[in-house]
Each structure stands twice: as structure tokens, then as C-alpha cells.
Length: 278
Image 1 (cartoon, one colour):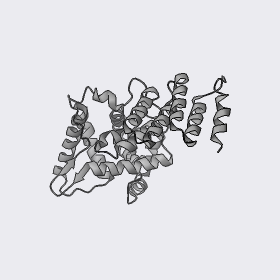
Image 2 (image 1 turned 30 degrees about the vertical axis):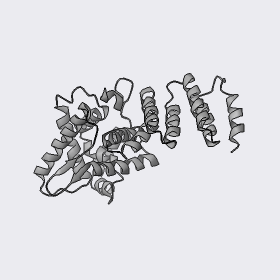
Image 3 (image 1 turned 180 degrees about the vertical axis):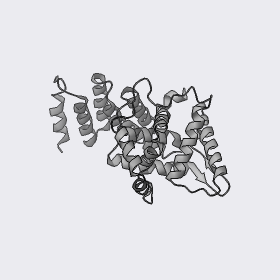
Image 4 (image 1 turned 60 degrees about the vertical axis):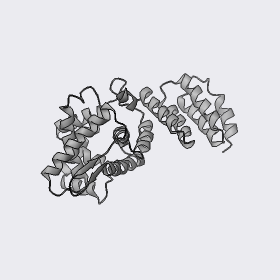
């Protein structure tokens, strides 16, 4: 833990032809652990001059700002990381955790589910599954007479289109079901109904949302239920395991397809809040 000496040694390697962005990450991390957050930010910035597409350097930069409670700069850094490295999962993870804790949950649930598709089997994936379920529960409130929908406080054309279509899905579900229980089965029905509504909504057509396109692909293949139960696999009361036990064949077919067919993200279809707000 002699971080100062570690930095001195690592800086001598920065010109090495095999040096990667992880070297700059370790330099910045060591400086931060040594109590010099600004020097850490400077090191990450130096690294980004050499590796401008480094998602890990953007996430480390955002982490320093997050610790400093500079939320605006943290979000800016994480989202720049997605722009420059759309298949690097950690920036989605950080943004999802931030936005799921705000009144603009829409960005949290979308960033979070994309994260799960990029990092499918880790402790963070399981953490995100639980967080997504809790966040939907916060944004979709069931009472005796209706379902209250509130995913965004920021009234923009995109967020209004999202809330209108999920509101229509919720209203239709309420009419069709006298008694509504909050569980994974209900969420799947709402999300499927939302998808149908979204895909036919002229006002939603200008917005390319790769996650919704992926949902449509899954639904066309008959995997929407299995995928959704996987997304919410950490829902309480063992809902995923109970469903899987009764649907082993369906889930097996889904996994057999899903493993070699990950969600595809590149510069052309990446999901970014700032793009949708412009």
C-alpha cells in the first residue's frame, strides 16, 4: 500500500508499447487511494489522451466525482464513457444506480437492464436485478382503483411518450384484471403491452431504443417471458425459481439462444439519455 512508490514505478511504464488503459487506471486509483483526488482525475485525463475510447477511465473519473458528491460531473463522465465505449458495462451500472434513486427512474431502469445484458452473470448483475424490481415497484403504484405511473419528473417528448405508453398498458391491465398483484407476472404483462403500444406509436417512432428493439426480437422468438423472468430473477418470494421449475424446457431453449446472441451495441444504436433529450 505504498501508493506513492507504486505511482512512481507505474509512470515509468506509460511509454511502454504494451501499456494499456489499465495502467493509467491503476495510476489514478493509487493517487486517489493516497488522498489526492485531483491528481487522480489528472491521471485519468492523461490516459484518455492516449486511450480516448477507454470506458474504464471514464468510469473511474465518474467515481471520483461521485465520491465528491459532484453528481453532474459524475453523470457526465459515465455517459461520455457510454458514448465512447458502448459495450463497456460499468458506466451503465453506475448510471442505473444513480437514476434508480431519483424521481427520473426511467433512465435507471433502461441503463440497468442494458447493463444486465452486457454483464450477465456477476454479483452486480444480481444486485441490478433486485434494484430494477424495486424501482418498477416504486414507479408503478397499484391502489384499489388504478395504477399510478411515474417514471420521470422531466417532461420531455421522449419521457412523455414512455409514460403515456406504459400508462396505457397499465390502464388496460387494470381493466382486464379486477385484482392486481405486484409481481413478475404482472410486470411482464405490462412490459409486453407497453412494447406493442410503443411500436405502434407515431410519436415514439423518432426514438431508437435498442432495448425495446431487443424486446421485440425476444417476443418474436417466443422468449419474452423467459427473458423477463431472468431480468427479475432476484424478485422476492423466489418467483424466478418457481417459474423456472414449471417452465424448464422454455427456459432451456431461451438460454440456448441467449448465450450466443447477446444484445449488440455500437456507435450507431447506443442508448444515451443525452441523445434522447436533444
